[in-house]
Amino acid sequence: MGTELSLASEWARQRGARRSLLSRACRLAAAVALVYGVGCVGLYGVQRYLVFQPDTTLHTAPADYPFPVQDITIAGEPRQTLHGWWVAAPNPRAKVVLYLHGNDGNVSTNMDGIVLLRELGYSILLIDYRGYGASGGGFPSEQGVYRDAQAAWDYLVRERGVNPVNLVIYGHSLGGAIAIELALHHPEAAALVVESSFTSIRGLAQLDARFAVVPVGPFLSQRFDSIDKVGRLRLPVLYIHGTADEIVPFEMGEALYAATPAARGFVAVRAGRHENNAVVGGVELRSAIGRFVENVAREPRLASDRFEPSPGRRSATDSEPRERPPKP
Image (tube, rainbow, N blue to C red; front, top):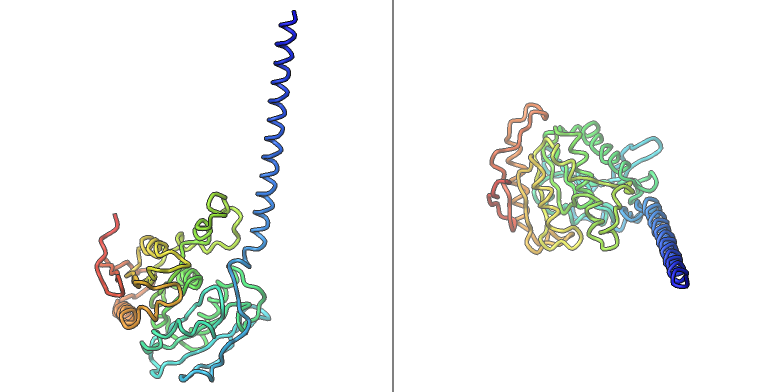
């Protein structure tokens, strides 16, 4: 009898311990879920401020440059104006480049990015998205900067009378993602150049150890999902990426190229970092860009929706053209 009571007591004690352990596990899971939920809600609320880092101070003025730079104002959404700089080429019939800069600074801090384009003799429009530089419109968002890029396109085509077949869309870093979105809606453009850009915000987030094991995807409001868009581009595309890019991995540039049927080339700038491809690539990079623009200008494209990728896609490694093996 005593043995039976002892066994019953031990069984009850173990059952109580299991219940206590289960209860603690449930409380821990609830706490983790709460922390995760709060963290995701917080991420949702602040991610615009993580993605966009606008500078509202113009650090130089058009008169500071030894070449003509003109302040321009673009009508955006109601009660919103965008500011930009127009850098005119000496030749009024030159190609025109719409230059979309990255997530920080403003037009005054991104003039180094157009050095090679100027040397090639192109006219260039740099714009500041809403909330950047002297542009109005409040703090930026993904959809907002897409609309700002569209407003810049409309300004060039409608107000300056630029023929889209002479208009190249060029985007650097975050500007590359914006350029890809704009090019999706304007396959009639001459070409698209994407420099130092990423596959998606989710892809970038997964490079951070804090987010690598957390499914942040469902909570992203700023996605810039370029990797899912490039397969639908219907105009010639050139990718440029520095092999030593410390912000956006070189492999992301390669991934965008591999996913783009319309891509004509990939320029790998040896030792190029995120912001200095023009300096490091120099004459060779300038030549690669110039050849690309000249070659696509010779292509007969009667209608943008009839554009087909060239069977002989070109790539360039270390700023020198080289055939890349076909993708499996």
